[in-house]
Image (cartoon, rainbow, N blue to C red):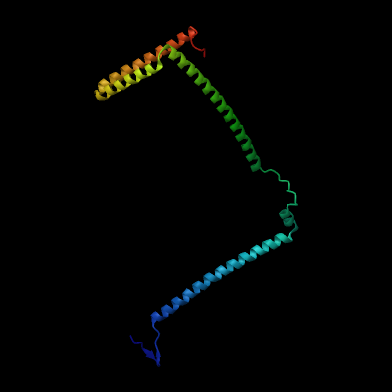
Length: 188
């Protein structure tokens, strides 16, 4: 490609001018980044130096740094008072919760003792393992029969089972009352 000349000098191309401008802009960008970094570093260094100089020159600051100055009496603010009241309320709540927990644990222990005693009396009167095994076997058989039966039959079986449980609960309550009346169980 040939370039036209005017007055014996080669004519400058637009592409060459754009490349030159691009390299100038790259150089300015690098120089600007370095200048900003240098200015920030120098400014931070000067600020720290000024603060340290002020701290060393000020007698009150030297006393605070040395720990010789007694702390100034601080008047409690409303926020400080409110925080103190909340801390006291929290301590009261925690103490009440602990007392409630201890009381509940005592009641659970008493209930466990009563259930254990009742189970011991019941085991003496009726073999508990055998009753549980028979109940589980009958429940599994009824459940299987209800599963394979139509809905109507299952509903009738469920109704009969519910009635039987209600009767058993009433009989159990009657037995407990009778045992208490005859002095066979602990009084509660």
